Structures are given as structure tokens and as C-alpha cells.
Length: 262
Image (cartoon, rainbow, N blue to C red):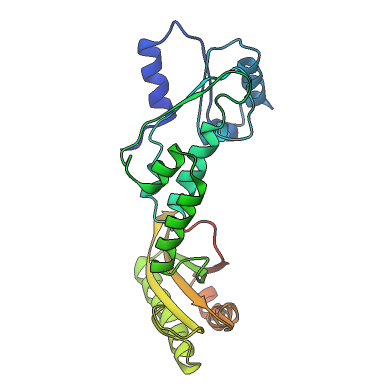
């Protein structure tokens, strides 16, 4: 279950109208009709104590300093844990520690209330204790076991096409060609392999966001470590497919060390 800021606002209006409220939602920032710097004006209104409560999305979690804020609440704090991203725990820990830092920043003490569906998850537990060292130790253990950075590097190869059968066929061709070239070089293998130079390919599979603007999306994840030119090989295979891809209106993109896996 995912609770939006608009739902929180709706519930607020039912029960808490005795407290004045300003709300700053990130989705509003792209609306052309809003006046320039509208969100700065709302934040100033809260800073000047013309409102009792500030409601916002993640954009209010960091970089703000309100001396008299003594209470912070986080709704569905662990929603990011449901994303297909190996950094999900890190992002959750980062968000919770950042938003908790908005309370009690000056003379007055602060309190933080966190609403979570997985309160026993190590990212939530360690964030509640501000225990960075313990979080890092546990997070690195998981990444080592599952072969994710910093224990390897990644390339995200994304394909898109208007027709799903064409997309699947071409994405599978890319993956098979890349795997074959890696085998010829002695690179291909499972990341559990003890050798230092190794490359593995996951996929192709449908992207988490499987369709954008009437184009289907598939992706491959290339993992590698050691002294091998995985980037050059991945680009070489893409270049060899470029003419055919252009003729069939297939789009291919390579993202080295991706920050988003969607």
C-alpha cells in the first residue's frame, strides 16, 4: 500500500483543521500555471510561523532548517524498499536520517515518528538509532552475497520498441551476442566464480516501467569485475546492431554504473 501526500492532506482536512497547514508537493513544481518560486514562498510562510504544519514529499526531507520544528512524522517510510533497486535499503536509510534531522536542530529538543510496514527491516532499525556503521556493515554483507557494487560494476542496457515481439527478439539477440563474445574472451561466468575477471548477464526481462509513450521496454543487466573492457564490449555489440536497430526503429541505451534501474 502506498499513501500519497494528497491522501494525507485529505485526512488532515477531516480532523485537524484547528492547525494551519502549508503543503509543498514535488508533482506541483512541473505545473506551468504555478507562479515562479511558489514553493519558496510556501516554505517562507512556514519559517515565519504563519503555519503550524508543513506537509510535503521527499523534497522537504533535506536542506531545510527551521529552528522551531520539534516534531517530524514520516508516512510509509519504507515504500522505497519495494522498488527493484539494489540501493533500496540505502535510499531508505538515507531518507529517514535526513528527514529526522529536520527536528530539534537548534535549542529545542526534537521527536520523530516513523510509520512503516516493515519496522524490523535493518534500514529502518539502524536509521531509528542513527547507527550508520551498523547499517553499512549489514548493507555491504548483502551486496557482497548478491554481487552488487561496490563488489562489481554494472551496465544497464535498455531496449524500447512499439511492438513487443520485435523488442523481445532483438533484446535476446543482443544478450546472446554479448554472451558469446564474452565466452570467447574467457570472461563469461557466474559471479560466484573465484577468478577476478568475470562478466555475467541478467536478462533480458521487462523493465520495471515496462511501457512509456506507447513503447515497450526491456533491459539487460551486465555485471562485471576485474580488468576487462566490459563497457567497450557492450558498446561494440550495440554498434554492430545499430543499422538493423535503426531500420526496425529499436532504441538501445547503455547506462554505465546506473543510478536508476527503472
